[in-house]
Amino acid sequence: MSNESQLKVENVSKSYATAADSLRVLDGVSLDLTAGESLAIVGPSGSGKSTLLHILGTLDHPDQGSVHIDGQDPFQLSPKQLAAFRNEHIGFVFQDHHLLPQLTVIENVLIPALAHGKPKSESFVRAEHLLHSVGLSDRIGHLPSELSGGERERVAIARALVMQPSLILADEPTGNLDRRTADAVTELLLSLQSESGVILIAVTHSETLAAALQQRRELQDGRLL
Ligand SMILES: Nc1ncnc2c1ncn2[C@@H]1O[C@H](COP(=O)(O)OP(=O)(O)OP(=O)(O)O)[C@@H](O)[C@H]1O
Image (cartoon, rainbow, N blue to C red; front, side, top):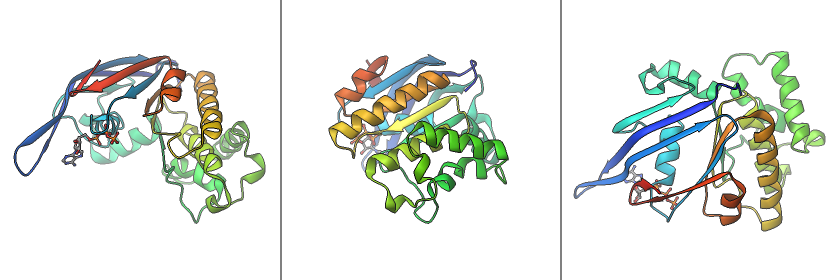
């Protein structure tokens, strides 16, 4: 969440080997974002949005090109260093939120802090503060199964912010929600984003969500228009 937040993507290309030949999904994609900026990536199904998001999230490597997050090339790190880097610099929000069903709301928010060992008291304070910000102060001891879809998505947003990352990557964050709930989640995500100065990138089919972000780019034939 520092003012140093920076994402620089240069000429990233990615192909998948298929039975017949190879499928070029990304073809020279570049991006340059700094603290507080938000970007929607739209495009038809199969255009490579998730592939790009996985590369930005350091979950997959590009074949060519480079990615720098806060001035660091994460793909130069060892697997252990990369896992720690990802945990500290990137928050993820997915459509199906990936909450652990056996953990309470606050324990789910603390998962990224747990990856660093025993969460410190400031992590608890921050988790409580975030749950308050997303309107779930009175649900911290509940299990995900006791929450609505919109409430679970709000827990996922709190979890994505708990480590004070530089970058939040959201994959269809409002995809499973009705219009009203989707609007509320979008508003919340954007207010927390502007408050914290984090860079937000959302992949979406929702024109409403895309219109709410500062920039909108379309992936077509492997290129960002
Ligand atoms: N592991 C893989 N091996 C081979 N092909 C893949 C693999 N992953 C994705 N693809 C192909 O790459 C293309 C881009 O997939 P991707 O999931 O990035 O698209 P998308 O824009 O996110 O689609 P959607 O909007 O439907 O989620 C698709 O044609 C897909 O079939």
